[in-house]
Image (cartoon, rainbow over all chains, first blue to last red; front, side):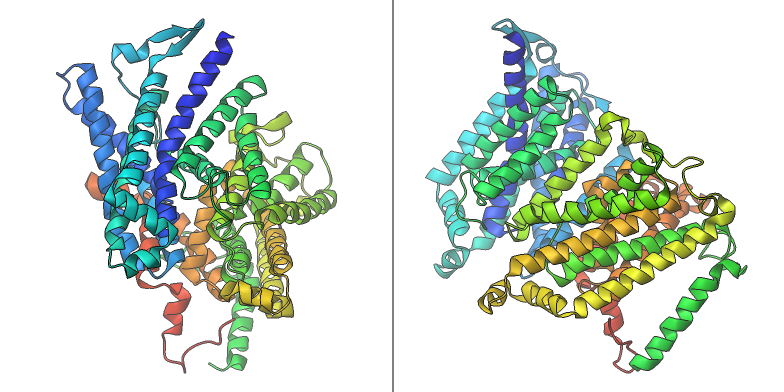
Length: 294
Length: 345
């Protein structure tokens, strides 16, 4: 029983990370029809930015350092994303494949740069004592970091749903997902919404980068790529453009991976996720909560 | 150049390439040793393999318009199935090649049949996911077959004597050249055949092809399978040249590198893709040497670190190309005055 609870919470935590990366991808795809391969680079760069910001002020308490790292990582992710959108993607609005290619190049170059500057070995992250401890629930000793990750991801989900459902800009974004040409025809500047969506997506990916460091206890240059691929799978299973779909699929993927990797063999879970993806595409090409196939 | 003089130029180039192992000239700056040294021949052989591989990717991406992110998988089939049959099961080379041919045909057929149910970017994501699953499988080393992160060295005694050792690099070089020529021939024939014209029509407007009464799905699948099979053939040549299999070639990053090669050369032109593959592999190799050169190592860290990462240099080059030269290096060529221009393939 205690193993099941532990796997459940750990899988949910993993799903939370996937959701944070997938949410931005899904929104960017939904509004702009851009598949952003640089999203993993946002994650990685933010993780390193958070790491160095947290260690820059050694006198402070570990909690405050962690929080500064969190803020720095989130902001870095957002700024990086906005720069990517304005400098690289904007000139290519009329060339959708060019947009994908440019993010591919950015991802390759950024990851090579991070690896060159900071090495490819994982670095240990210093966490507040409470986060290194565990809490016992139903007999399972659960690392406290899992709760932090889950709580923050839940807040982001709530925030995104509020933003999309209750604010004027959210309305523009939703309308743009439905029919971009119509929104422009009504005299609304959709391009500003593009930058906004990239900023939100980048901040979520940046937050995921720092939380990934909290979750695993280490950072390394290659985790962003792994996260990106998992997030792609999550986005397709959940339905492109649907935030709730992404959240649902992220939880499913995280749990499936954890349980099968533990009960079957390491790697089986990752494999099963791909099979799930194939099954979803065969039965519902648009994803679980998506519309008809894109 | 008229098509005729172009054909003559290609024939001369081909003869020089074939005779290269007998030419002992040193080309300073371009290659480390003399042209017929084992190192140079190996590098050139790898360049040929990547030229062929880039061409196979151009068939699906450039000619059929299918943005597949799983092409590394089919290349890896050629590398790993052959290596496993030779090393783990001690099969002879012809037996191993026969098995590889069957897998290289059936796997793209099965996976393509699933992936092609969706289009555009979802298609890209699904192909990526399958390739990633294969990459995970290779790293997990199931039943001790793939050797996990270590890869799988061919070792001694598994290949015929003529394919082993530094002295026989020329044979491998010729095999690589033969693979490139065969791939080019099949690729050229395929894209100029009636189905090949349908592929290009699908790339331009799939719905219209369907309205004309043709089933795009079947044609897309044919393109996917042909390209996957030829990628497997290139994989076998790669395995022989490298003397082993390494898991890097199964990763998603490797497919992205293929994409860079094709875009570098020019999407939708066969010769452009071949040149892109050759130039990329050459640059990747030489940039690594360049980064270890003393001139670069003496630079301050802010310049040294980016310049010592070949992928950084290539990634930036790629971005610049996509932004400012969408037709690739081949496009640069086509901007030359018409009189100077070669007939495109």
